[in-house]
Length: 190
Image (tube, rainbow, N blue to C red; front, side, top):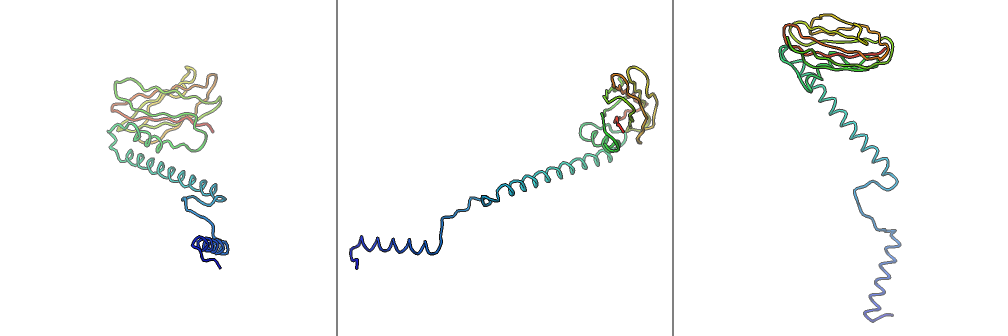
């Protein structure tokens, strides 16, 4: 039998090792991460959740912009996010491939707003609208030839077919009627 203090300490240490080994204990710690075999799935799920949250936030912001634009008085000229929200609401990107779009504001006796659209050769639909209290005028040319030239009432969408040839560029000009207006267009391919 061991009676020395060093011998007793060694005997106690041996007993602790035997008990721990018999219990199957191992060192573990929580680093906040999933177990090694499950980390990729957890990271992917986290990325998907972040993307879904960002999409929902963007959709909510777009809905708020559209709502503000629709509630604004017709004699108030829109700009920035409100203008884009109005244009996306009255001329949504649906029913074909949107080749180009644009929006802005025009004032009576002011310079015309000129925008350029590029598209593939063939037939396209030029959709346009204005937001205001009277009318506006649109002049669209393809390679210098008149494709659309008309005055139109504000606060409803309009559409005309155009044929794109050669350079496939459409120059779109808006001119205000008797009051300021917001205007927008979208060139759509079938």
